[in-house]
Structures are given as C-alpha cells and as structure tokens.
Image (cartoon, rainbow, N blue to C red; front, side, top):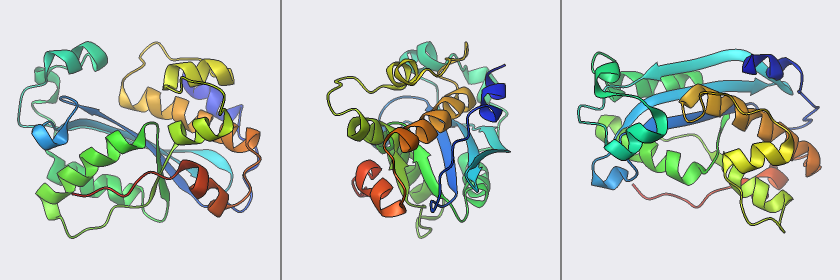
Length: 204
C-alpha cells in the first residue's frame, strides 16, 4: 500500500514547523476564467513526522468539469454533483491546516485557486503561507531541467501510486518528496526553507 511508505521514511526535520501538505483537483486550469476546485486532499507533518491526520473532500464546483481535466483526474460531474460546495469545504480545510505552513507541488497553481475561491466565500480571511516542493526541487537539483512530481518521485526513489492525479495520492508523494528534499538539501531552519521554496505573492 502507498500509505505504508509514510511509516518508513520520516527523517529528522529539526527546528521546522508543522506543515499541511495539500493538493487540489479542478475543473480546468485557470481560476480567473471561472474554473473551480473539485477536490481537496491534505495531510499533516508534525514534530518531524508524517502523521495519520488527513483531510479529503470532493467539492461541487457548480459547473461542468472540462474534458481535459477529466482526462487527468478521471473525476466526473456525477461524482461531484452531491458533494458540498466550496463555501462549506474551504473553512474545514483551513481549520485542518491551522498553525501550519501549506506545502504543495507547483504551489502557484494551487494557491491561485485557493485565493480565487476564498474571495467568493469570505475574502477577508488570510490564507496560510505556502511553500512549493517544485521550487525546492529546483534549489536542491539545480542542474536538472524537469521537476514535475512524477520525475521528482523517480529521482528520489518514491514509488508512484496507481491513482496518480487524485488529490490524496499526490499529497502522499509530495509529503515524502518534501522530507527527502529537506534532508538532501541539509535544510535546518525555516528561513532557509522559505528562501528555497517560497512562491511569489499572489494577487486576488
């Protein structure tokens, strides 16, 4: 089982805070063109360990899922039609992520959706700080040209789940990649991690 790997690899991560590693599935690529979130998956890293704390929810986007997006994650309109809407799911996710730093692979994409969806719910709420494992991979492997999650997993020796491109399996791979990259990069402070993995400030 893919989740068994979580118990195998948990190297020491001293002086670093708690993390919420998350991933989104969406109706399409651009939230500014009306594309919406349809799934949120997340897990927590606390006290130097990947924990059993997990968050997963489908989201009713109140619009159709594009053909291109369906080809990636295989979610259908019927599967999300009866799911709660984002104004119900997003507060629960942010409560789950409280007192932690968000982590995502290609985090600019995920955060652009969270920023847009937040504005539609209650825009005055601030999102947590977010770091990007793709940026961190670029810092740790500066001579490599490709840093997508599949390539990074192979590079780090992380087994790929059969249901890649669903939120929770991608979260597991990202969490394992984060810990391995921190270890390989000999990162021992939040300041160093921020320097190597922060993303540009997003404008709503």
